[in-house]
Amino acid sequence: MHFYRGSGAGAARYFDEGHQGAEAYYTEASKSGDSQVAVEFDTWVGGERSGSTVLAGAGDLVRWVEGVDLVSGEVKGMIRSGGVDRAPLRFVEVVVNNPKSLSIVASQNPVVAAAVDRVLSRQADEISQYLSAVAV
Image (tube, rainbow, N blue to C red):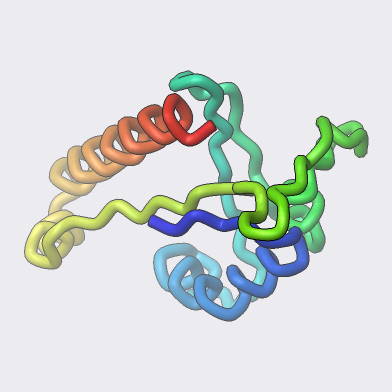
């Protein structure tokens, strides 16, 4: 779990430097040679999912982290300064993992793969629901 408190430009560097290869590894982009990988962010408020946003265009992540609505282009609110000691929380990255042996079985059996995907999704939702209720 990573709590990100930087700027939109910093978030783009964070994903480009540390995550782009991992995301491409698990998508069709790695097979096609396409370096543009779409990322989906869920937004949670008070323990409830309030929406999902797919960031596929260049600069979408920067604008999203800076609080700009990607459809209308309007700023969604004010990002409060955290003072000298603490920058405001922009997003929380949650990685949910499972044993490699289960991944191997899932790669060989579509029924197991679907079940594993549902369990991982439920786990991510539970973590996100909890964080959205207690983080702010």
